[in-house]
Amino acid sequence: MKKLLIIAVLTTLPFTGFSQSIFDKFEDLDNVSSVIVNKSMFNLLTKIDVDVDDKDTQDFIDIGKSISSLKVFITEDKAIGADMLTTMKSYLKTASLEELMRVKDKDANIKFYIKSGKDEDHVSELLMFVSDVKGAKIDNRKIETVLVSITGDIDLNKIGSLTSKMGLPEQLNEVKK
Image (cartoon, rainbow, N blue to C red; front, side, top):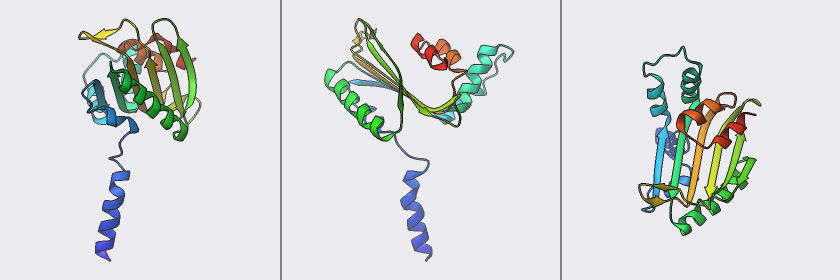
């Protein structure tokens, strides 16, 4: 009986704290730059001694405490960008995300998706997909596609602070409206 219990625990362990995102497959590809920040790093950042009399700083700390993960994948490879789009579309069918907004101009196409949270002021996931990027470079590498996934208990009333502090696209400020 004890062996059965151990086997059951070990079998379900991967589904608890070690779950991976469908997008993690892009992390190890040569033509993909990635930034993965987990809950522990956000917890560490919120412990840095800063002046919390500033509302923007306090908002940033509060958002950091509520984020479970931040994943950014950037590629210059059109085939990988197409795979990112296909993977995102597949994910959207199963993950209960709704489109928040689309921005299309001559320099890029940007789509924002959210997954509802505990109430109307919170989301559990914010997904951004940027394609057809023109003229943007990082370290002399042309950017074709960007995929950003932020998960946690995200307060939409404070997201404007995050976008301005991290230099994310200004269109994310529309999320809080």
